[in-house]
Image (cartoon, rainbow, N blue to C red; front, side, top):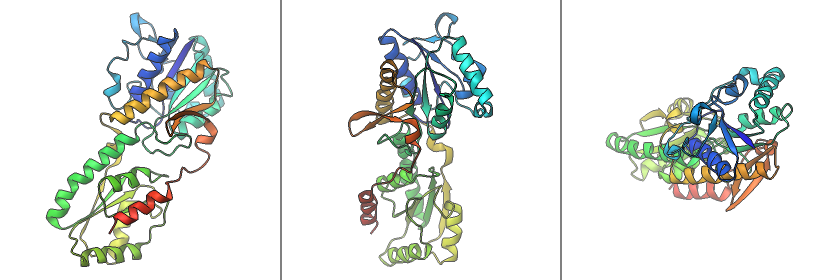
Length: 329
C-alpha cells in the first residue's frame, strides 16, 4: 500500500517526528509513504517531497534526524480550492494518479474538517494525527506541539520576571489559544504566575484589581499575568486598558508571544507523542480504520471519529483550575 502524509494548518513542534514515524512504521511493514508538500494545496497541485532516486516514495533514510526539528519539512499552506468540491475532486484524482491508497493528516480541527469533507471524494482510509499547539481536540490528552509551546511560554515568563522585579512592574503576557486556555493555564502553573485569564472562566476586571491591590498590600512588587488570546475580553492589550481604567496598582507592560510559541526544537514529550501517534495512524490504516484520529488517553491509544474531535469544547479540569487559584496567594 502507498500512504500519503501531509501537515495542515498551523505548524506545531513534533510534526516532523510524526512524519518520520509514519514513514518508518509503514516501511517496517512493507508499505510505502509519499510526503505531500504544502498540505491540501499540495494534494490539489500534486506536489510531493522528493524521495529516493528521483521518485516520490520516502524511505527511513529520507526522514533521518527529522525528529529533533521544529516546523514541518513538508510545509503547510492554505488552500481555498480545497474548500470547494471541485478542488477536492482534483485532489482525489491526484491520489489515484499516483497510486496513493490512504492518507494521514497531521493537523488541528480545521485540517480534520477538511479531511472529513475529502472523504466524500476519496474512498481510501483517512486517519488524523492531532498536530496543534492549542491542545483543543477531543479524543486525546495532549496534542503534538503543546508541550513545546508551554516550554517556550514558560521560559519567556521566567526571563520577564527579572525585568518585572527590577522595575517593580506587572507584565501581561499573551499566549496563543483562540478557543482554549490550555497553554495559558499550564504556563501559569509552570511559571508560578500570579494570575491567568482564559476563555473557560469569566474575567472580572474589578475583582482582578482588588486581588492585585491585596498582593501589593502584602508586599508584592511585581506580577505575572498570563492571558490567552481568546479571553472573552479580547486579549492582553484590551485587558491592559481596562485594568488601567479600573485603577490597577502596578505599572503595566504587555508582551504578546504570538507565533514564537509555534517554533523551536520539540520537547522529548512531543517527540515521543508524535512517534506513538504516527505509528498508531499507520496501524489504523492497515487495520482498515478510516475517518478517525489517533490519540492517547491515559496510556492507551484510542481512535476517535474525526467529527467528534472538534464537535465540542475540550474542558480544563475543575480541580486544575482550583489548584491554580490556591497557588495565587
